[in-house]
Image 1 (cartoon, rainbow, N blue to C red):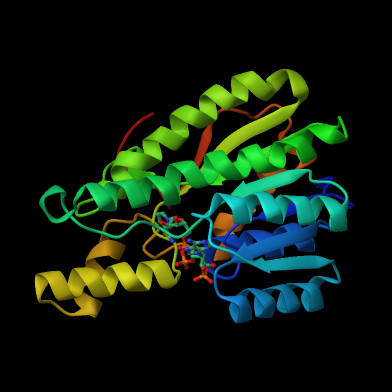
Image 2 (cartoon, rainbow, N blue to C red):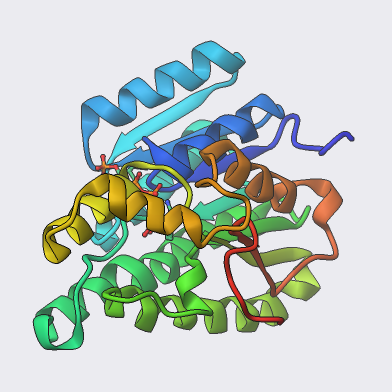
Length: 264
Ligand SMILES: NC(=O)c1ccc[n+]([C@@H]2O[C@H](COP(=O)([O-])OP(=O)(O)OC[C@H]3O[C@@H](n4cnc5c(N)ncnc54)[C@H](OP(=O)(O)O)[C@@H]3O)[C@@H](O)[C@H]2O)c1
């Protein structure tokens, strides 16, 4: 299947490792040039060099924190100057810290709102003019979490804010539909990345149990019998980014190996 990504330009936020990097890599393998960012200058440079070497695509990279709106605006301006267009925007960022309601104060909720909700809003605001400029439609994809539909224990910040992204996505899909810009989410269940390693360690410490026990329990809840692989998650992002997904908008693809129990 030709995904129609050759000659396109994709921006992947928080793309130096994990789900963002895997998505960036697959988009480049399918022929897109890239712009990626993350906070750590060495890591984002290394990821860009690795993807460029493996795919032969152009990979622009920048060190920035997605909670700094002025940095996102400057990144969008640079992408416009240097890559000339944007066809695909993948909104992504680090996950908010774990914790319960009693453990997290007003400041923690405000920070998580910046990282999860306002990150997607500000990034889309900054890049939308570039998605619109060529008049050929576009793709906006936000990485969220299966916790948006089925709340995860000890993850109240994520559970509170991911559904807001889903509501924003559905609304924006309706607003941008006439411009042939689709807007969707891809929600991971448990996909093996450093984020999951950190959450496993946190749960082990909190419960006074071994990381191996925590992992085994998590896997027991996944019918597929294992964590997802980042490239499996990236396949969903890349399909939604493709020309083939032109009538899929305002929805969420869950990549969870059938872990969730909800019917709809
Ligand atoms: N993996 C899963 O199964 C899973 C499940 C549910 C939800 N999610 C969500 O999916 C998203 C990606 O998860 P992941 O597993 O790929 O995480 P990860 O392995 O920890 O990677 C996070 C990426 O985001 C970058 N990043 C973190 N904070 C940033 C910031 N403030 N500004 C710019 N870049 C930032 C990191 O690079 P730097 O450190 O260089 O900034 C890194 O490239 C997160 O929101 C996570 O909560 C993941």
